[in-house]
Image (cartoon, rainbow, N blue to C red; front, side, top):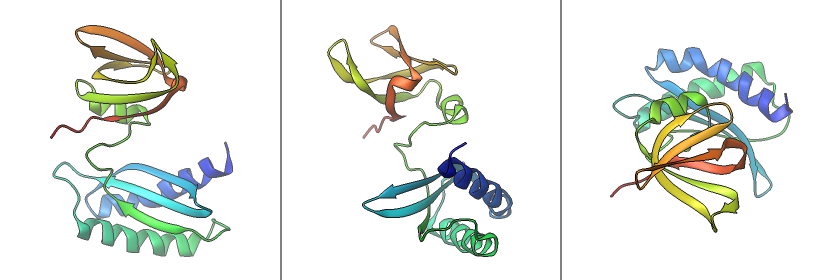
Length: 154
């Protein structure tokens, strides 16, 4: 497991009781470097949607827990937010909760002349994702997908 994955895992472990106490669930945790700065992001959710108070309360509690445990060496910015409407699907639980919904995916390399596809998420397993496009099922290899997220319909 990489250092990044260890930080994400340990943060998620710290976050579990905090999320439960605040009536939210953990959608995802990510530790990323952007423009030379490190960010530790915790995405929280609940059926009726999270509000600013949920984010503030979880942020304060998680920040305190991270200060006590102090396992991240470099400086970072902690962000707590909702995963949003166009949430990225990364984990099996994300895929399972999104079956039957419209998704958009982007590939690293073109297939049939394009890198972008959209359709209804039909199924998934450890290796593949199947979406229905114009009444036809199309299978994509998970490791060839750069990003897959829920489609935004306005």
